[in-house]
Length: 363
Image (tube, rainbow, N blue to C red):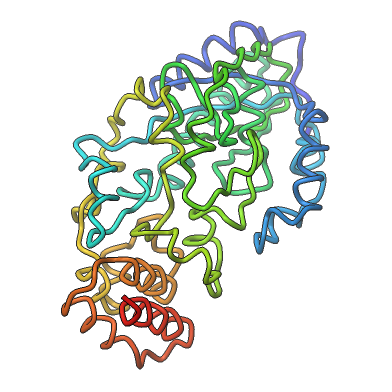
């Protein structure tokens, strides 16, 4: 990556233009940071050493490249961080769904189309605009960059914090005064010496609602997450058997968990997304567990095509729903549905169906 020509490009003016372009492309906030993540690196290495990442081997695979942007992409001088609202409008109240044990709770960010595609497309368009502006001023393009959206070894929360988009909450997610934590993050690594933004002050105070509400006590201390206990990890990232002691705590959450965000006072200020792609599909905000459990693999692939949920696959989908049905109220329809899957070709599915049936037999 070659450096742009600082003699010909007005980087302060370019930064202002980047913000304008970002808002035109549907981002609600944009900030710029340097690449010094040394303060976060020790915490990352300690977290990995303690094994809190569980089976997410990709977290450790790239080593220090996560905390050293210029090693991941040589020549990187700045990181542009962007925020896009993700809460879909007009959804069924999350607490009501969680209280209805026969319904399926799906994390609200996953109710629509896969955000990776939307974010990557918009980030690429912004990078193109930056490249064009640099080429126009410098007559030759001195710009090189790379876009990221939860797709590479990037410390996106720390970068966004440094860029002034918010502060790290005690649940480890980024928080902002304007949008709480209900947004997606994306980054563009650039080789331009753009002016950097100032980080925000923290505004969590003495509040520990997110720590206290976690169903599996995965937030073992403020700012400290043991992903191995997190329901989002258990239902999405974990490919094998869900630990037996944690299954009853999952309730009816079949894809992700929002509890720590639902109780956060700052999310009271969150605004719904205006992106059509993030709108609820197939009534996933309030759908029967039995309906979803009846899907065969073809129906799973068809209805979840273009969804973030699709990547877990049908086997893991059935595993998760089997656990939720084991936690649901006992009924003839629940027992019948589980028995229909008791002879499934997947050992993983059979194991969790057997556990669910034993749960009902013991009541």
